[in-house]
Image (cartoon, one colour):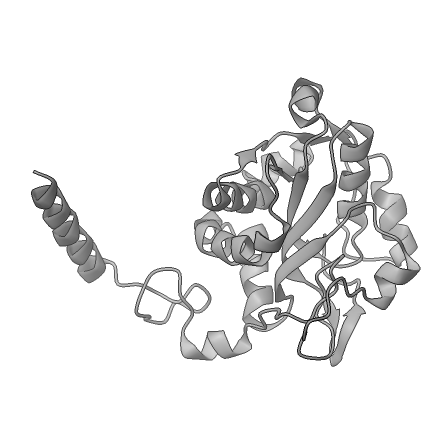
Length: 261
């Protein structure tokens, strides 16, 4: 019976592939398997390698070597309210287009594949008993967008690593403008006090390590507000994982503040 079911599943998969051939996540060109990029879009995707800031995940010059705990200039100048961080890709090229498609292009179908990228990047941060918590949307923005892209990514990461997901662990208590303009100081002021731990999950987060998930990090203001809220709510050490990290063009290790957070 088991062999028959497997054979039937293989036939169904083959039929689905014929009817709906796999397409590139970004441009829609034909590819060999679901969740892949075509060669052109793959070349544009800047996956972050071993040499990175251990705090915010931004790529740094060099090959990584055996140096652990490297920190970028921004993290040295502005201490972060979390312990470690990782990002899957640079916010540029096909990586940028995919983030924008997921966030603003009504493409929640991208989340499983992009979540696998994020889960791979976040693997060094995973700890026993860790809880995955996405950066929340304000209800007004949730009503307009219909879904929280950070929660979709967080669900994929939690599933792959066998972690508990608290999709509503944080809530926005104040509606804030999009973080796509203004100085670094303006961005931090914009989200100050805007995020809180949800009362009904406070006990489940008490003392437990948290993996805070979002789609993109520029200045880190939104993640900082969320990490501080988790600390104030009694959570254990917080690590952050984002799909994309914004950098200044041609300047590895230098953050840029233009992308919306």
